[in-house]
Image 1 (cartoon, rainbow, N blue to C red):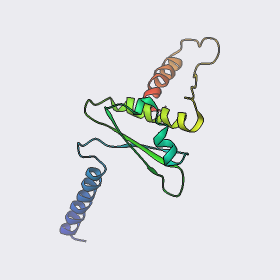
Image 2 (image 1 turned 90 degrees about the vertical axis):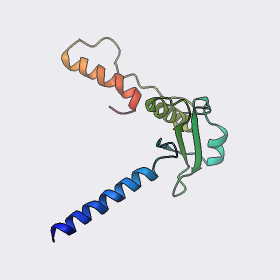
Image 3 (image 1 turned 120 degrees about the vertical axis):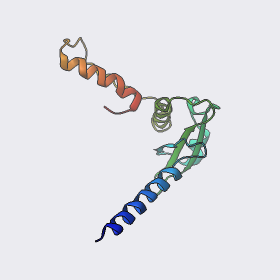
Length: 135
């Protein structure tokens, strides 16, 4: 394989990646965040939580692939709420639509933890996990 073939292959791969990245973005360049909800699209569209019914959030509801409920997609519009807030709103909407309430997990057991370097790190990570949804 010659150098020219390698350069052309790399250029083609880069072009595909750029195209895929741009096509995943909306008109204003903001990406859609999507969750799958285990309810029919008709029910999801009617029962949207107030956090997603604001003028600063654009929402789409469509059938999920393979008859697996609905896809609930959201992205910022106009005044841009922070992406973490939008992600949290989608996660909470999924829980309310599927279970009827927002499930809370209290990471701290009853009582107090001793203040060691490891528990300080754990507390810092758990504090940020609420914003991203993962540890």
